[in-house]
Amino acid sequence: MSRVGRAPIVLPKGVQAKIEGSSITIKGPKGELRREIHPAFKVELKDGTLTVIAPQDSLYDALHGLTRALLNNMATGVTNGFKRELEIEGVGYRAELTGKNLVLSLGFSHTVTIEPPSGISFVVDKNQRLFSVEGVDREAVGQMAARLRTIRPPEPYKGKGIHYLGEHIRRKAGKAGKVGAAGAKL
Image 1 (tube, rainbow, N blue to C red):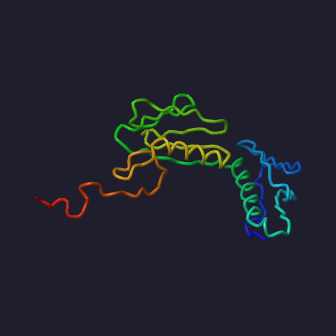
Image 2: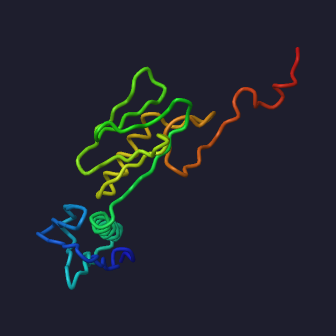
């Protein structure tokens, strides 16, 4: 049995859950999320607490924990929301908002305009180096942040590009950093 899967999900105040067969809908102050779960699982709602009940087959242990984690993320998302922060490194690289769209200047011959999907919003810091992706669906927020990072991933020599805030970028020495290259004369 999964330890994560057995843990109950206590719904915060103002959050409602609706169970219709294998479809779960959670509604809160920030929005509403709906997810289909595996039909082998049963979800019970008692006194503001969701419990995921798995079949006794050991094949479903990992899926038991996953199902519970997904439902917990839904409850957290409709109450607090999720946020993923990214940082831009590089001379002349910046981000700005035009309406709801994110406009990135990343050293290309053109700017890159990203239109947010439904449920996702962008927030840009005043210095235009930091920006964040926000929304109620954790999966959608993480996916959008990953898509933005792939537009100009950080390069290993100077670190220029888009990276997650606090992400460690492995650096390479470059041509001049080779051992013996500085003092070698022919």
